[in-house]
Image (cartoon, rainbow, N blue to C red; front, top):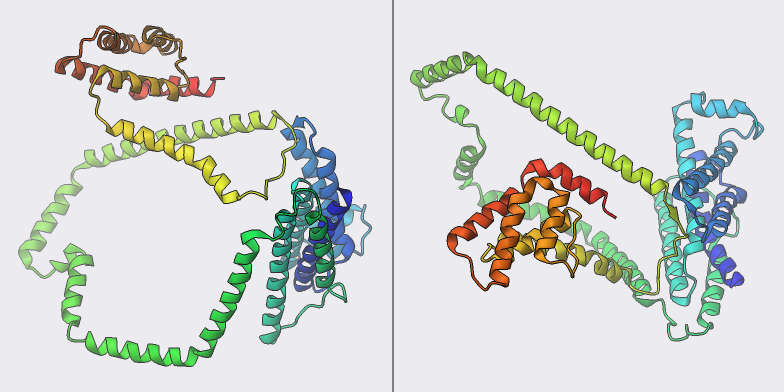
Length: 459
């Protein structure tokens, strides 16, 4: 409902405005105007509403957001640094890029731009966020934690004798935050189906318990700090006195473990020095070793450069394909469920597949069936899957058509599989060893480029 969306936006704006005003006053010396907070937030919200569900290319969406970000940066930097110039004049824009006002002014511009970008993304995220009772309670807890950290920072600065920047709204934003939040949570709780979830769940309880526990622990540490210092000094003296008789033994062990050997054997006599001199003289005369090392180093550097270039081209290809793809509006996250369990349920199948593959590699091949199953996994990794209606011979022919250089190995494995499964004749030790060697030849590096190309170009 629109009224609930408006209340959610107001409660988000309250704690965002408090932090933005505090940071702006700390960096630039003057509080941020309310318009400088509303412009990026409302721009992000309006763009999110207009682009929600729009079917357009990812590149187009990125260009739209980039143009909006440039507009937000221009408004923010002009207000805080170049307010004396007109907004549509090129003088202050040249000053931004030339850095005519000094290094600190440039740092302030970067910080202001980052804050404006964060406010823009918070407004953009507001559109896709759910507005049921549990989600609003979670947002209320986050806003309450933001206010707590803000005022704790102010009190610490004031306690250390620093200058506390004034609030940009004289009455503060805490009371409006509570009013908008309680009204929004009450309306969401009265909606159909949300009466059962009348609490903020475990998230608020964890935050409240953590705040109380940290405050109590900090108070105890500060109260007993002089006694803790005295206890630490007494304990250090006791340990130093007790460990003094063992000092030579410990130093000898540490010297034996970590001191270089040539330093330990430095005083063994003239014979050791003569042998070391002979060894160094002999090593200096072997120039072919240095030449071989030089060429090997260049070969390794060339291989690394080729691998880096291939990885860069592959990343660019994926990036261009992603930018030119069409996407629909991405729905917001389901905050009513447990995000951690959802993430675990998505990541567990990947780790399970990795574990199965590792166990399959460690398990020795005991029959032709095991080798044929390994051949199917090899084909899946190469982008060639076996359909349920395909026989072993048909799947081998498909692999042979994709990778023609493994014809002999495929014929050997598929015929042995048919002989064992359908003929009922188990393989002897020599035939099984021959099959193992044939399967090991499938993993030679000369087949990697073709397998990678098949994997990338598969549909």
